[in-house]
Length: 218
Image (cartoon, rainbow, N blue to C red; front, side, top):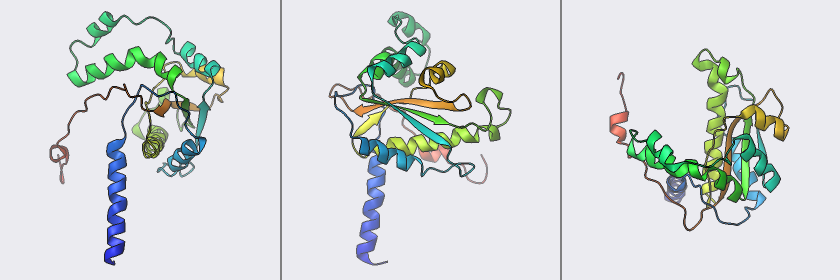
């Protein structure tokens, strides 16, 4: 390998590392439209993720209208008033970092759906419905679609667009309201947008990878 080729490959590796480190969960967005070509670019890269059956049976529902956003809010009952003291009590004995995340996230769920310029609903075809899974192999389809989601989020971060993965509780209601075929499942609802100047960046748990790597056995 020539010096010039080596330098180019090193730069590509650095760009990947920078993008990975750049990606963050963001719940506060600017009032700024995301160009559709950026979303399509991220979806295209999503489809390059590994999949258990090589079929990549994933679809993306794009939402931007207030009417569709309200369908999500109504389905997930996000319009109810949040009792912050009650929420604080629920997470009182939890890990500090996790507690801080939930206390920030839960009160913002309605707002982040309304404020995000675009919402992406990632849909997949299940091998077995999650509630009927009996072994890890049955969840290969779920593992595959989340690899797709990671590629999608990293590709958005490359263009300074960020998001937050929201796992809905009332999937069947959402599918009915949005006309999603019954045989498909929703992996995640992802509000996306440009980061607000006031967006809160939450602490991350620092990992010592040496303690997490096990050679030959545990």
